[in-house]
Amino acid sequence: MTVYIDPPTWPGHGRLWSHLVSDVSYDELHAFADALGVPRRAFERDHYDVPSHRYADAVAAGAVEVGSREVVRLLIASGLRRRKGRARA
Image (tube, rainbow, N blue to C red; front, side):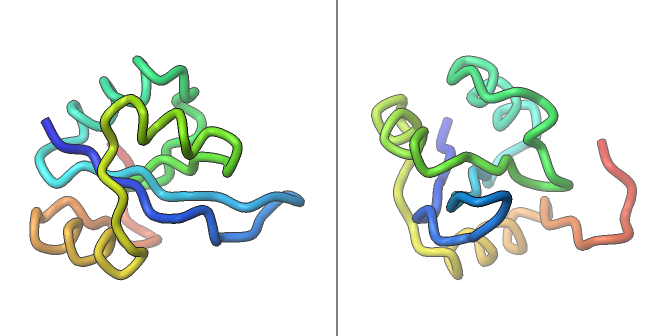
């Protein structure tokens, strides 16, 4: 099981955010997020938005640190990338 996280550089709601993704399945991603205590409402089409203060927790739990471009590349290569306008699972 490998889950990836990019640096918290995405601004929103007065804080910075990371993206947590899987290159295997959404089930794997949801299980990791649940174990980390990330609420399901943080799931956005193909990733979880994780606030900067939880970044170290995600890495300590086993998320692999990668750059933002690598997150997108992993999602596309795995077939899990969902662009805006597509249905949610």
